[in-house]
Image (cartoon, rainbow, N blue to C red; front, side, top):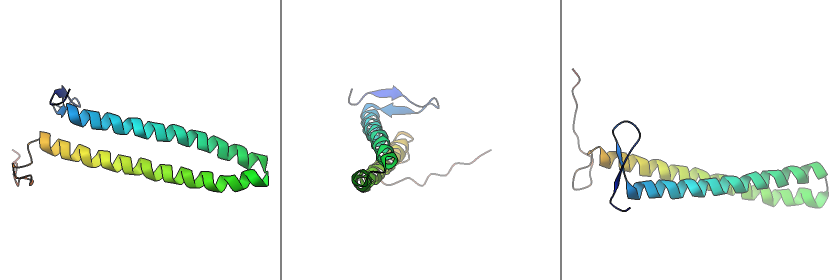
Length: 109
C-alpha cells in the first residue's frame, strides 16, 4: 500500500497511502481512548451515586485519568491536524523541493 495514491475528499485531492495509514491509526487510537473514557465516566457516576467514602476517594484518581485521556485525544487531534495540513500542502504542490513553502500568487479574474 505504501506509495499508492487514493481518491481523496471529493474535491479532486488525492491521498497518499502512508498518510491514510497515519490517519487511520490515529483515529483508532482516539476511538480506543474515547471508549475507555466512557467506562471511566460510568464508574465515576456509580461511585458518586453510591456516596461510599472509599468510592468517592477513588473518583479523584479516575477523574485524573479521564483528564489525561482528554489531553491525549486533544494531542492526537492536533497531530492529525498538522499531518493533514502538511499532506494538503504537499499534494497541492505548495512546497518547493527544499521543503519551504512557495510564494506563488494566484490572480482571480
